Length: 291
Image 1 (tube, rainbow, N blue to C red):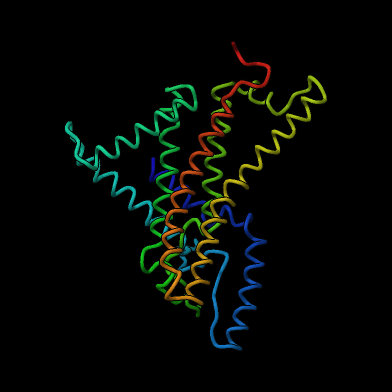
Image 2 (tube, one colour; image 1 turned 60 degrees about the vertical axis):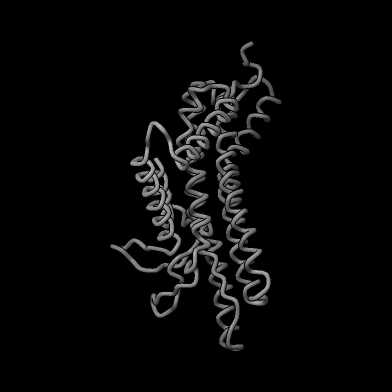
């Protein structure tokens, strides 16, 4: 499940979500051109690029530095899964016991939140996969070489690796996956017409207005999901670059430790919001709750 989700996010990474970031990319290109002009005049400066840079091209498909890190994250998770599977035993060791405690705790919390152990078991793979994928992707971004190893591409030097969540394409891909699962869950649990009744209700003008607001709010989850994760990770990346440029021997280490914590929090937030929105989608419409 982990590999499937990560690879889906990888393929969304560049071609599908490009339209959503085209305007931001154009602004970044303008800012980058201005910055290069300033560097030419003054010799050096801070280089910040909004979109992920293309490292090479494979059969017409642009391979970006964030996509490479996404693939590395997938490989790390798959390797850990195979390693743990081969170490499974009736008498668990410390690693197996720790993983089992984590999974049992999360599953119990999900069952309490969704008020159904069956639903908890059904959505546990997705929720846990999102958490592990975002967590590992964020933490791997602090390894030496990420952002500092440069390669030549089309006459310019670009970083070989970049934090996956610092690219809006990847976070938008995860948001689309979570959004589709949330909507499908509501339709499967409640039925199509009852679920649609949450958003299209002609019983009164007030209910119609409330349903319309709910629909707009529901669609807004795509923006909130993707921009929350992207904004926090990208802002942390820029902050470390700026601090490293001005105070290279004083603040980068404690700030990097703080960003490691932020990476963990963002993984928790993304997975928890997915769980809570699933809960909202499977709830009975107002006035239809069974007692």
